[in-house]
Structure formats: structure tokens, C-alpha cells
Length: 237
Image (cartoon, rainbow, N blue to C red; front, side, top):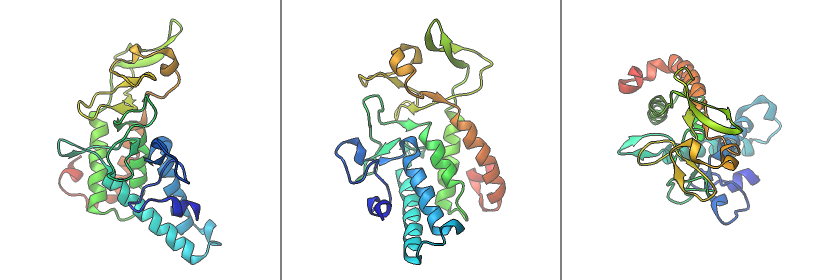
């Protein structure tokens, strides 16, 4: 009941409920918060393990999940008219990308967006809008990989080092205008070189990850399953 009550009319969930002032009230994809809630209500609605739940609550859980999907689709960010991915937090009113902690600026999230896409790829009978969202998101991951660097400890500090043989990485945050990965200390000033941030933040946050690999793996399975529904760019990619 608390989870159902906490959901906004637009389908999003805040980080905390009852609501708190500040970024806690934003629609929160950070750390997969909303995705995990959606996985829970989906299971309550349909999984045999939740057969003990009464029909009214199971129907409400199904409705909450469907509204969550619509919120995800409504939040997907367009840059120069093209769908991309998501921010870690979105405004609970107008759905725009919003910041959270001082080093978590409004951005395109290479971390949180992977969980969102993988959730969408688990939907049965994806609608044309879901197909478009998935195709656009996977395309963004394809175009946003960071190659030629390795993150490792050197001289007592975590650094980004040139390595042409390193596997591709993805930044946690990408600039909304330039599309470049950026990093922040607690002063909230974006830096575009990982080696320029303080050790406290370089070691205290996941600035780079291999999230795109999970996206590509799931996309390969998804495309094979739904090939008969794909047309145009979706079929070609």
C-alpha cells in the first residue's frame, strides 16, 4: 500500500516516501531505485509466489507497473530532437533531468540508463514506442563508448591511463549539450578529465563502468525475439 501510494500520478516514484524536501522528491532512477520498485510490483501482479495477494492489490500493482513504463518513456531525454537515454533523477512535475547531490549534475546517465533499458527489454509484446525507446537507447550506448583508457591505481591514486587494448567503458554522467563524459568533486564543478578530480571523489563513486556490455547482451536476445516487430531503423540496427 505504501509503494502504491508513493507513486506520482505521472507514474514515477520519489527516492523517499513520505516526501522529503530537496532532491529526495525527484523521480529517482539513481541506483535502480525506480526500476527495482517496478520489478517488485510486476512480480506482485503476476508471479505465482504472490498468489496470496488479493485480486484488487494485484490489479493495482499491474496498473502501477504500466504507469511506471509510461513515465520511463515520457522521461527519455531528447537532444537535438533525437531520443537518447535518461538522467539519474527527473523532475516530478515536468519530467526534465535534474541534479541531486553536489557532484550529481543533470546529465545523460550511462549507469542508470542501462537498468532502464534492460527493464524495457523484458516487456512482452513491446509497443512501437517501447521499440523506439530501446533502439534509441542502445544506439546511444553504441555511440557513447569510451575507448583507449584503463582505470587503475598508479602512484597511490586511481587514474585513467591510456591503453589502446582496454575494453570499452561508459561514463556515469554525460554532458547534456556536448555528450562528453564529465566528473565532479563536491564543489559541483564539472571536469572533463577523470585525473583532475580529487582522490576522495575518484575513489568514492563509480564514474566509469562497463554498463553498455549488459545492454548489448540483452539487446541481442531482445532483437532476436522481436525481430518480426522491427521496421526501419530498429530492424537495421
